[in-house]
Image (cartoon, rainbow, N blue to C red; front, side):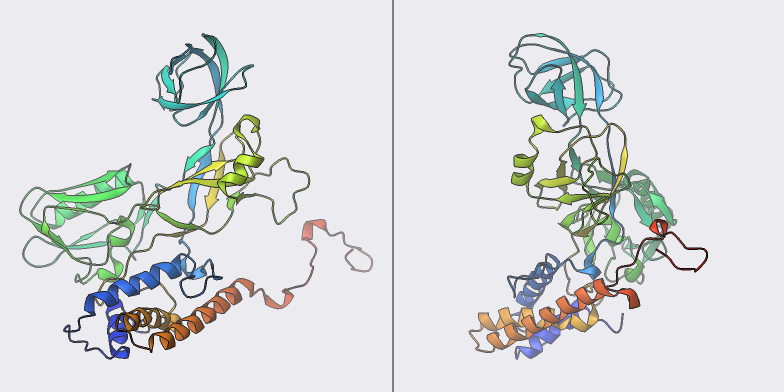
Length: 432
């Protein structure tokens, strides 16, 4: 990483440019890191802090692998409803939980949402008291809302180390390479940490917050995510910890949620075509993002149909970046989906092992941006100079990003027929 500036290098660069000492005595020591992170996180979210017209989907910030999930088929059967009650009973117990699905009853215009239901149970509740006459009805339970998370975690030689200490020398747990779920990864970590140390460890995953917790029942211990010799290939990233040591406690919970989304940057990719005869090749096998008002206006729930969706909207995104979306239709078979996104990246920390993911030629943008805010705090007229330098670097980044998306070889811009749509004249060798 010698070609890239660490967060500490960037901090010292900002202080130097602003006429401040880098020996830890500057009154702006803490402010620099705050401003570096302000500029950094804004850049990841699109980069409009220094240019309101910039809203770039940075290639270098994209998640290494998309969020993989499945559209789930409808469930049908009979349900008994009671007037003025939220309680209902399925004729036969669904094998999966139908909580969160819309409930459509035969020959009724009103649509309800299943508020609570447990897999294998006949009892359920709806989101408001049933307003029509009591009775038994044929129902369809359709899933429109989906949580955007992926429970597949890949461990390789690039992220399989956990350096820690029980009060003495550094200890290292080496995780076996492979594909894990959060639960199986917890088992692997506590097994390897317990084997490497003298104490017993317990690792858990909270399915609601989607964060990990590493705990020990003996004396306090430390997680050496910054000072450990394997900091560069640490598992801290996939576990959601900052690149900093965790010390002085028996329990440490991660700061970032697994599958946290900062921005959705691409349509959802699917491998089935919808029943839209006017769909061209560019729009095929994709579900496009629209705003929630447009989806409500053009695809009201009471008129949603059984077909492969082609539109979705974000219906919820909590402060940790956990995101839920709604489709504009429902399906009758399971369909594999892929969501491209920019994840919530870890903050920059003041140490030599914390690096921004910004391409090294453009790391000065962070310096200029932070220096601009420091000079504003100092009421120094050079603040405007740093603002202009930051804007120039931002424009250069945009150009570089778009250039990377358009490099397509010597055939760029040419109309070339698809091979399966070309007939060859066997006599002349021509294609037509």
